[in-house]
Image (cartoon, rainbow, N blue to C red; front, side):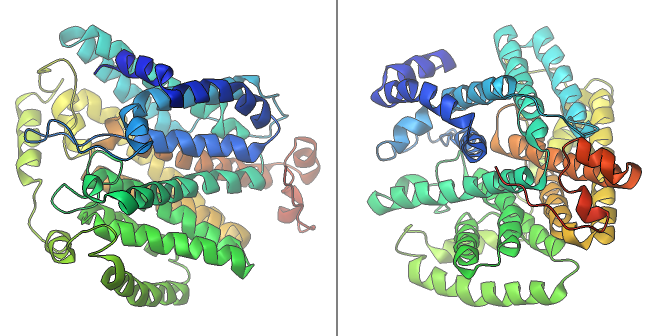
Length: 464
């Protein structure tokens, strides 16, 4: 069923009618509640991850229970609807005086250049309708980030809410699939006995889970009250348990990279976390591994610890394509571009050297941001976990992009999460430059409530 058919079915369904009635209430409430706005960001990220597994042997995935089946089958229209709500809020919310230098991180511009090249290539030799649909969707995502999350980041309270929103995506995913598992675990584990949940395959589920790890670690370290801290600790354990069930080596690598980078200055805390996970995860696997999700842990062990390169054939084909068409890439075959299991080789094969230029600039600008955040964390220890969260999130996504093609997506969770991480990193860099270059009085006049902390005075706490 096409996009417009899905949209009509969604609007005509009871769930869609309830949503249409609730939209005016949500919009009016969101204008007074920053937490609701960021929850809508989390909801948009979650719906962007909804998909059905498809291959040459599976033409229709097993149905989920109500209302998850209805949500999954309408995942893209729901995401576009939430995207529109966030755009409306970004335009409609009153503008505050901003001390920010740059609201749009440079790496996002590089990804936009790649999408423009894909649009031109699809327009020339593929489906014109799909080309315009893809570029319009991607433009909507960029505008949403620019007018919404990036512009809303004006102080550390909003930074915390942005981190919270990404962590909430993981919690929604865990709760949603736990609900499904209570009734029938087969539809979320039928692909080689691995956990794929409500996503398109286990790799996508693992990428979602691993992307939330840095944010969960930040919230654990941020909160001092054990009641709140314990909630986030349990969420982290649940995420790692689900990550194990995906049997994804890419997800495991992303999760390990995130933890190591987050605690790279605190080896003792890293050791404590590793010991806790080494004790708790095996217990959880023994207790629930073969019951709650009906996943065979032996099969998962075989996949997770398999050292064979299952992507070698795809990568070799991508390299051959680049060698044959090194300038503009392989001519488009079919209606649209389909990325392979490597974002970098997919760009090289499909767009040639012309596409590799903005991709290289993307990587350079990302590593420049990481370098600046590392300097800020050293200079201002109060912000070390803020910086480490972004460094861990960005590098884990870059590592994941070597094994998955999500850098070339248009409306996917990894892409939106990447843009939010980049926006958070840009906020910290702007804060670093502002405190270094400008006087504290100027900062206070321009609505930066954290100038006093950097000038040696008492830190202001601002919560909406």
